[in-house]
Amino acid sequence: MPEINPTEPSNFIEQIITEDIKQGKNQGKVHTRFPPEPNGYLHIGHAKSICLNFGLAQKFGGKCNLRFDDTNPVKEEQEYIDAIMRDVRWLGFDWEDRLFHASDYFEQLCAWAEKLIQDGKAYVCDLSAEDVRLTRGTLTQPGKESPFRIRSVEENLDLFRRMKAGEFPDGSHTLRAKIDMAAPNLNLRDPVLYRILRATHPRTGDQWCIYPMYDWAHGQSDSIEGITHSICTLEFEDHRPLYDWFVEQLGIHHPQQIEFARLNLSYTVMSKRKLLQLVRDGRVSGWDDPRMPTLSGLRRRGYTPEAIRNFTERIGLAKRASVVDVAFLEHCLREDQNQPAPRRMAVLRPLKVVIENYPEGQVEQMEAINNPEDPSAGMRLLPFSRELYIERDDFREEPPPKFFRLAVGREVRLRYGYIIKCERVIKDATTGEVIELRCTYDPTPLAQITRKVKSTLHWVSAQAAVNAEVRLYDHLFTQEDPEDVPEGEDWTAGLNPNSLEILTGCKLEPILAEAESGYHCQFERQGYFCADLDSKPGRPVFNRSVGLKDEWGRLEKKQGAGG
Ligand code: ATP
Ligand code: MG
Picture (cartoon, helix red, strand yellow):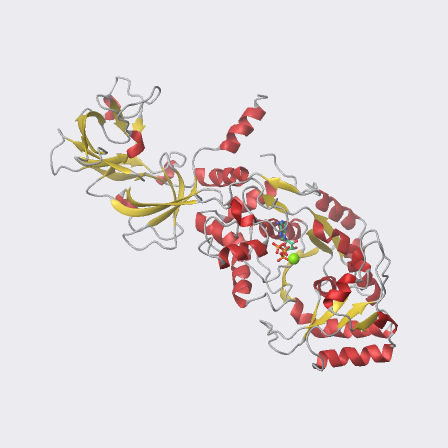
């Protein structure tokens, strides 16, 4: 990784900010915010935004607020608010005393709405939501002015106050900005500022029956908080003229909106609406299902905050929409885990081995290296005994060419153990399945073996093994871009039916018996794993966070080598 010079801008937003500081804009201050709507859990796309906003504040000695854009009580819940705060903290960021809510500003926003009315720049409209939509026009055709556009300031003020006082039914009136129904930008065609909606708000309860629209709340909230750079995703580019119009009309501090491309990941969906549907329909076990791209899902899967922060940094910042290969996210996790993860032995699909010439009842404690990447991690003891488990897949009755692992008449090395030779197999009388291998061992210590033995297998002593459940994951969707489904078609049809494989009866080395949820390690030859929330003392449950095969690293090396 190249060293990043903290004074050198590393993306276009940093360039803008560096320039602003040079020009003395905002007295050289930098103040950003992360503004989630609490209508779902945060996902990896949000992590990009969080790292960006908090990261810019850190880099330029500024501040970053956490603000909930809680303007739509129909979809917002306390559960989401709590989860969002937990996830931002987990990622490693601190908003200190700067936790805000758009709902903190409801009174101020109302007062500003009245100011617009007084200035003849807003009016109460009796058109239904449907009619507002129908009269809006299209990209090629201007909209139609509302018949209520000509109401007097007095009438508008009176009606707006009565809307607020609860005199009208839901949906019967809106407050709209009076801008230009022929504006080429549809967002400027008299956008709605307020709607009447009787819904209990997680924070303000039933105090309000009118709620501000997102566009009306967002920029003004930024302004109130003294935000200097209001960073958002590209779909708000067309809203920027409206953002600017509001703060200009009100004559208040004018934050600068800057857009960047949202992060998309291959083989998953990222829209909260779709993620919510997966949760509600039971297609996943919850928001924190390890297959979900949510931060809680990734955490449960075994991702660390460092791996995610590193990922969001390294994908860079784009102005154009793109899809990042999920293999790169996995690559970042492997990189993160390679150094610290202790190495452990785990047999996921066990096949019993009986070493006929090993004394019954004898147990030897074999020294095993905890982490070849970290000598300070030391050694541990692994019990070796007459009965062991190896991976079913490490034995073949009829070994194909290039299969150098165990077969009848062949030798393999058991890591930290001995060389064993398979003498014969025992089969299930009815199914014919191989259920046990009868082997012999060479008591010569491994270090003194001079003959060539091609394969080294991992193993677990049968007597000492801890029974465990292990969950293996694959992509949530089978197609690379599951968002790319025509309107009206069932986007869930692309869900991968094999995204979760549950293995019971796995055999782990004894040290893993008490693994607490969140414990990370590498199972030798299998990947990086993390103990799941469902683990109980003596009965661990592990998630495979990521396998060892690094598709991304392989490609990178190939490209680096010019191949
Ligand atoms: P969704 O479309 O999934 O509901 P959203 O943009 O409505 O997402 P918000 O809670 O409003 O969700 O997002 C909070 C912040 O995170 C916004 O500034 C938004 O631009 C940013 N954000 C959301 N999704 C992504 C993404 N995929 N990549 C980068 N930033 C994102
Ligand atoms: Mg949003």
